[in-house]
Image (cartoon, rainbow, N blue to C red; front, side, top):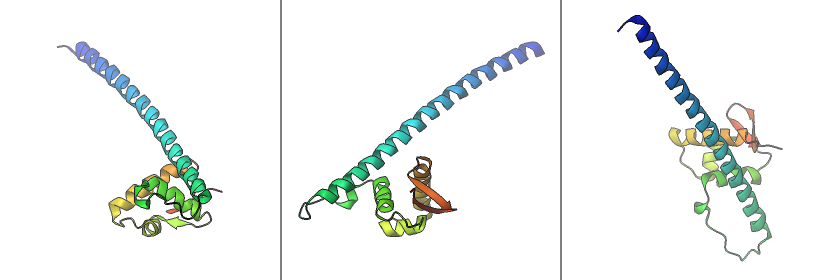
Length: 132
């Protein structure tokens, strides 16, 4: 095999890998959009549930808090405390979630998504509050 053949093969592999990377980037963009839409819908559903719960008579049995997703519980907490600034660990304690580092990191990621969606804002590093 001579150098020109080696360069041709290298270029062909480069082109194939570039096309695959472009395809993967496109899939990531589509999945990111779908995830943002699903999370926004979850937030809307949580807000709707809160409004309906506020309109129902006090003797009406509501679903237990354990059935709500963590996202719903987070959004509900911020809706119930619109002016309060939460640190992730404080939010975990408020919600009764585990305070181990992996759980904290997952919630930090969730809060970042809610910030990107415009539901929350970050007034300082590691601090989150409801967007007004």
